[in-house]
Image (cartoon, rainbow, N blue to C red; front, top):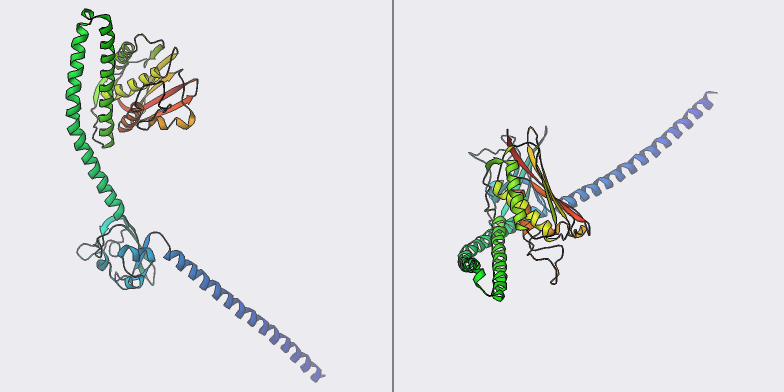
Length: 392
């Protein structure tokens, strides 16, 4: 009886040993699989790290490089393996002061610091953060080579300065003869009634053409000045309703003889507002003249209102017309220099495509903007919004 019991126990132990061997084999297989997966993930991470477009360098607490990717090696124009072990001060002009590193010693992050490398004087933007745990202190630094951008910016600045100098010189050469032409035209116009009828027609053509040319020259110079950021605002305090009354009177004089119906509406209450009245007048007049140019036997409306806010009040001016309208794909292009809705050589509407571009640039300079809603064949609505200070 005891022999049978011992045999049963041995049989049970044999089965348990077999199960343990199977579990061991399964565990070994799982460990091998995890090891392979770990190596694959490590390789993947290493490859991703190495092919990052921006340079990445890791420094230890001694400020020595312990890891770097290929993009970082390209910044310094050396082999990647040569970076390992180098100190930060060996690579570029460091941001440490009095042998104190703001990242390691003061735990301050660095964001987009511009500096140069020692090896090839490349200009780089650096950002650095501290990664610290119980066992390691690592500075992770990213860098971007902006040498080409710096060179391009310098070349652009030089080109703008050259253009500015050229315009300053040519301005006098253009304005002087134009003053002579306009002066003679005005003198002849004062004696217009003494001239033969045929010469009167010639004189009218001369007067219109010279004024149109003068306007174009002025816009070209203003567009150039805006591009160079040399236009400055001149703030003044003025009465809002009176400003629009004078603007309406001037516009009616300019379009005398046109076939459009023009209407204005002002804020119901008189306000004293502070902004650049000269630029504001220029922008609104440009919108009105644009509406008049592209509208024939239609309606032009100018509606203005003040929106009072505690933090920021705004003047909103809508110029609406029933003219030819603007196609959706062209609605942003009309604010680009030298572009019109109809850009063909045989277009029926005069102009170089400068007015709206200058108007939007001026509105942006004033802290506002101009938006457009339009339907071809039905008309357009230009909306100007500029911040103003209201004085009661």
